Image: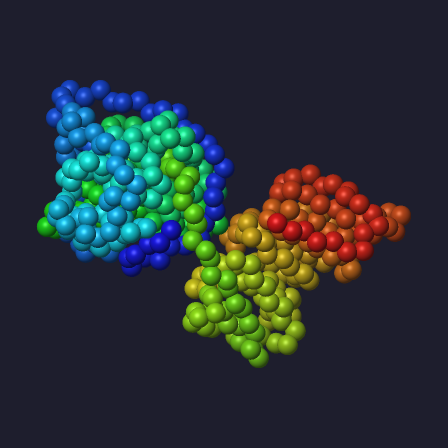
Length: 403
């Protein structure tokens, strides 16, 4: 997915499928009380939003403005918005599809927030049949075009190019929709999801800002808007593709640990005071090293991201492995321990190991090679920190776990 704008996308994981139950439509006294999307008065600059929402038009208007299928490709490019107030104040876009400034945009693709999601689907994926309201867009894509969808959960996140719908019990029943443009959520399930939209947060002149934020805390999603737009229920399509992550380069230069993202990235000084005996580790955006502390205890230090916080993970540590799922596996003397993420909780996995024990890990699989009671070098393996150990094979002289 090609994106323009000031906020760089981050790499995340694609979830398993989990379909939500259909949400009920709230009974409203009059059609005028229905609002298709959310609008917000924005006093601060777009980069630091703190908005409150206001309602707009009715579902009856939406029926009148239901979009018709449009030819694939129509609606792309910045010039499309010339007839609809110009570009949003942020000027952001994804795959050359731009949110327009007019929060009450109405064109062959749809109306208000639904218009941008519907136009993106038509331009990028060649799909039609989205009529809204915002809360129903994802369900409609699933029902009409068999687009796979998912709901938030532990480790369950969208990627750029996925369409998101949101709603909430007791909130405005029409909800909101947009297209995910960036995801920055750490291994503990905390961070943000940026999505492009129309008729979401509004600038002081009433124009659509063009993007909004979903906040993720311990894998629970929320928005910053107050009632009746305090949406806390979400689903999203599984159509996009995660941006390619730049490989991390980690080096020890004398006593200094440095790291950078990609061959053209800028070096970041990560730590000092290292020695020739220091072991360095890295996987994805997790980096670490084993170095004696002031008491002479070999200690594992780890951090998430080049600019993250260093954590004193464990000591003594004789060997360690990082995995692509954020697992950290260590041997401390005769004990094998593992945890997920730099702030996770250590789990004791096995005992009775020796200095000759080889430890292995990839994804959520961990293992080790150790002589059994008959003196036969045996491979033991398990799936998950709390999984069951299996006596895989013996004798084993060498082993590799691979994705």
